[in-house]
Image 1 (cartoon, rainbow, N blue to C red):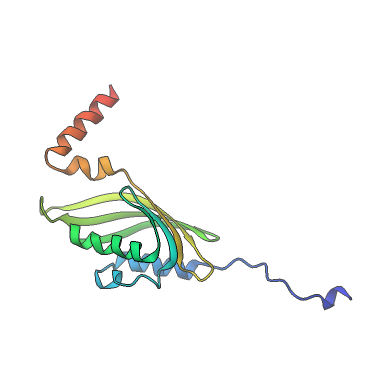
Image 2: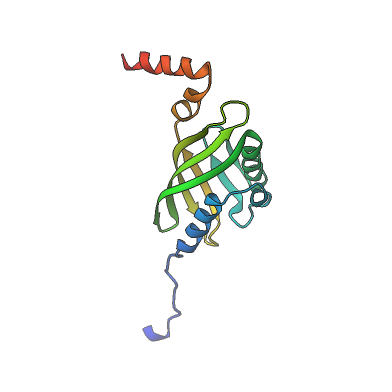
Length: 156
């Protein structure tokens, strides 16, 4: 058999730029309605971790996103930077919202997310990185004072 007769082997890596663009659009226009069914964004067995949750599976991820709308008013993300390499992406973001039971002032959490895409372009790994103490707890009445005190003591 001559080398020209060998079957072609596809060694290409899927280009996930369109998947990343779709994901960024989802986060920047997030709504409760869009969070009812995330099957177009996440795989059935996707892994998700943030400072409060570590879970696997689309039903659990749907619940986390829906619960966000129970906890805060007007949640939305502003993606400030993104990097894509093969099937992995890294997003830097601001999460903006108002607290339901506290101040009406807009709050901001700064964070980042590591994403891995499945071959079909949906997310199969989502890991958020942000400092819950600095970005959230320090802003709460009573608890915030205590957290700032602990932080000042740790610096001494």
